[in-house]
Image 1 (spheres, rainbow, N blue to C red):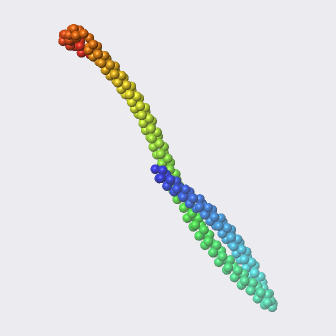
Image 2 (image 1 turned 60 degrees about the horizontal axis):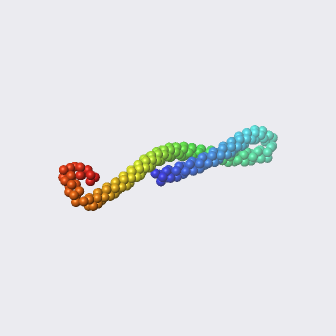
Image 3 (image 1 turned 90 degrees about the vertical axis):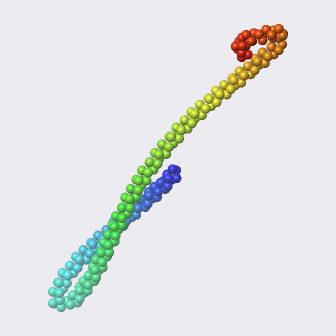
Length: 219
């Protein structure tokens, strides 16, 4: 069980690190996307400005063409050259604008992918957290069972020690009683051997007449 908990904690830390990295990547891409948007807006403003300039130049060109009727061919040539230059710049800005839009779309897709990964990592994190909570509750339950079993074992051990002590006391009392009985029998036999013969005969007759009494006397 501790090994499962360690593995689960390791997976939990890995998921948390991946989630943090994904959030950091998403923030960076969001910043890049914002910069691309600002750049795109700047390009769009420049494009509109160039278009306005082109219109103004076209107006001036029309005016110059009118003046060319009076001999302003050089002015017309310069204006036409400037128009071609502006058209070239406009084409370049439009291509850069399209490239910026493509980059913006790629960044937006990447942000969505990272957001999906963050959501998945969050779900995995929640599942791992739930698993850790269950394992911890199971460990607490098992710990409580172990503590209860230890209490029962300690109670039984105390009972065993009490019974052992009582048994030892009973054995000591039995040994003491047996020793006392042995001494009483030895003393009885010693008294019987010292008594006169007549008394022994009388005692024997008495024993023959009262066998139950004799047995009681021996004990």
